[in-house]
Length: 209
Image (cartoon, rainbow, N blue to C red; front, top):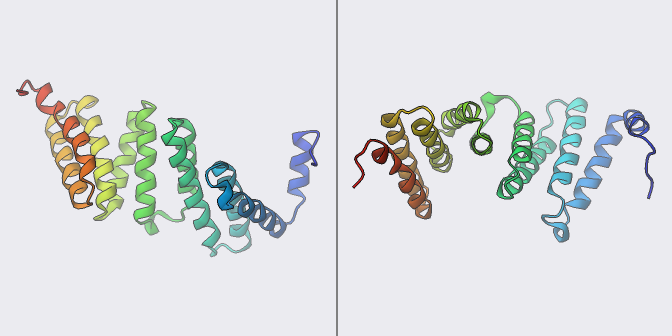
């Protein structure tokens, strides 16, 4: 196996490669690591190489989106795996990188709305409530009838609204919105958690029985 003796030498060698060759090599590595036998072993490496390939492809042809879309999906998937492992800082970085490759915001759809909402959740668990709140509000604005996004974003936004902002009235409406969206999305199994969290509003107001 070849190895560079220093990071500087490695970077100089990389920069000397033509962008078309960088694109080819990154795709070769990403495809090799994406082999079904390696399924979830190297998600971040796959995402990194597709990300670099997407940047090279964009420089060569700014209108080409196929590799960028693969990179967005790979980065989001790696973010999901990191989030499930409670690696919130890593997940936040991966989601942010996915959105950076997603193209102009005026063309975003349900995929990007879901990634924004997932980014909001990772920031929520990191205690960065202002940033998380901004992401959840953005996700709701992007959702445009996507009940999965609405259920997720409204649930966390409601929690921030009642526990951090102290606005129980708005929080109650957000919890109701989340529960209704979860039911419409055919995800009744998620409703008990939302109902339990929603119960904090009357409890805080001294109306719990």
